[in-house]
Length: 207
Image (cartoon, rainbow, N blue to C red; front, side, top):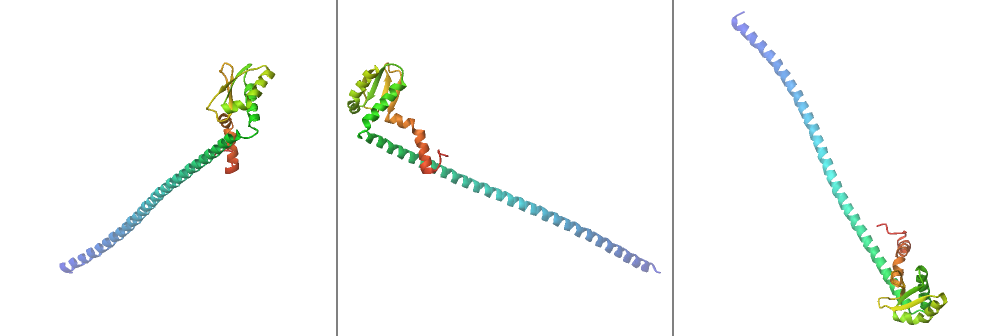
């Protein structure tokens, strides 16, 4: 065989081997590319899910803030409404008490309130504080009570009273306040409980 024939055979062999090598490289490249694509897709999917999760979390947090704000505003309105109801009822009670002074049973109530104060304080000397109109209603009965119980009773007129009385020990160091305002204040909790039970269906405010 001539030298040129051998060269041609050698070129063919090299070409054939080169083709195999190229095919092998291409196969490896395709496999690596598929791995890269798959890895990229997984990473992209992960990032997408994380982004969605983050967005959902932010949306939930924002929605929670809106709900919390609405609940807080609702509670504030309920508290305001209940305070308003209580205030109106107590105002109505005060008016009822003031009108009670014109009722036939008021002098008896005054005597009961005064005796309650005297029984609650030590000693035999007392100062009874009343408004002028009330003093005129019960003065004679109080003088008779003092003689009956061997008590020394003095009277004092006060314009600050709307009704009821204040009973002091003789030295004025001790006071039993049985004025309308004080009696209403002492029974405030019980009155409120009754209001909650009657109007709101509870024993007390849950705000």
